[in-house]
Length: 157
Length: 177
Image 1: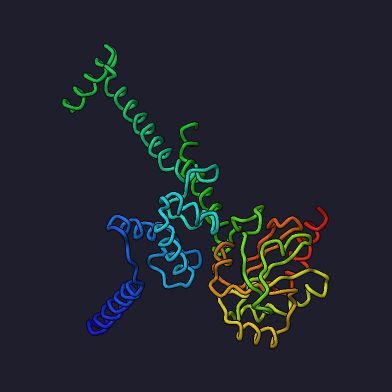
Image 2: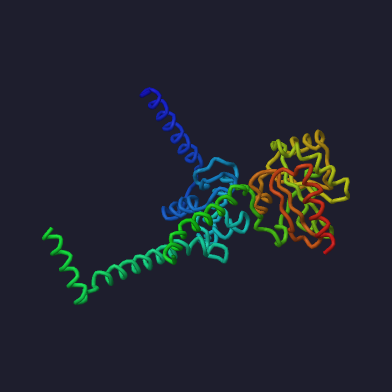
């Protein structure tokens, strides 16, 4: 059993190692460390259109390689990150953005978490208020008399 | 009684969520509309597969409603798709091929083996035109109207039943306009 586990772990390690070395085979020269950083973050923010759920920086699919190459060229041309993302969505659609933009179709996606937090706050406020009101409620003279009577009856029994 | 009704809220939420997710199960995760619908066909200048000396550009697609099919010899589904494309050509539809990420020899071999329904084939060895079309696999088919505007996009394999169900109706729809 333990042997199986070690085998599986070793396999996993090999797979992750081969994936990182594969990405490292592409040799690219950057003008500055900042440009390299932008290249990496763009590769992480763009989704491979062919793969089910992988950033182009993680994928071995041919189209992901083409897209990395294009990101690199556009960076060399001095384009901004937004321009590069627009360039990709013009061709491959909003699908390639991991963070979809706020548009008519995506407001629900962005707005729902905030709306749910707000709803939760309103419900909590409502519960707190009703509880507080109930505990503040003082006994009337008649109720106090009745309470005393009940407590006394219990004691005498 | 009124308070009791509040107890139904979780059930209502559950039903709404269940219906929403159930509908999602039937969706095809790889199907999505091309972002080029309603846009002009991207500009390009490439040679043809038939004649390396002949340069063509996007004006090739103007004047007649055309189906542009992106294929490659390396693509097994493209081979299965050829009988359907040949049938579409027989129906009098103009087809233009894009030989995507291929070599000339392989491209010629493919057409000899599986037939050639294309009026002309644009040779795109680097996948440059494919990239501008947002192609991420082959086959993909674009319907371009007489003004050179992309009107319909079919991702992947055209099944025999797709000819009558979608392709021919779409061609006729955009021919009429």
